[in-house]
Length: 166
Image 1: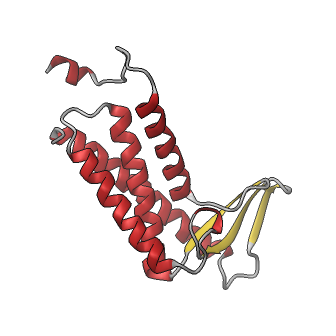
Image 2: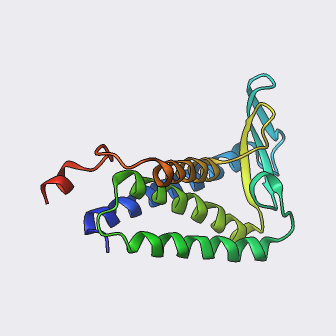
């Protein structure tokens, strides 16, 4: 089981990602939501905009209309990640931060699915499908996990100084 400080860090990252995700979605809906005159605000014409979108599927809208299955899958992944994390004795900092980002993002989108029946996406960048803060956190967290799990072992593991003293 990780040290208490590791768990506090993970919960803090997850809670921060979740709060920022929900706050940005709330602000977006109040500005360009479904009942507003404008549903899109361009910042860089054709490249960067805020655009209200209801995503009824998974990433990029795949599996549209399968909200119960996506909800169950999200819960299963969250439980699996947290159980994996809790088996670590001294997880490296990258591991704690990455799992915190994935958990916070997954919870943000899970709350949307349960509360609304869809996920609110609002960041429109170039040709990419719209996404949100939770999607970004999940993507970065998963990439960091892949990097960490596949890189060769080295003495530089972004370990905290306090762990090196213990």
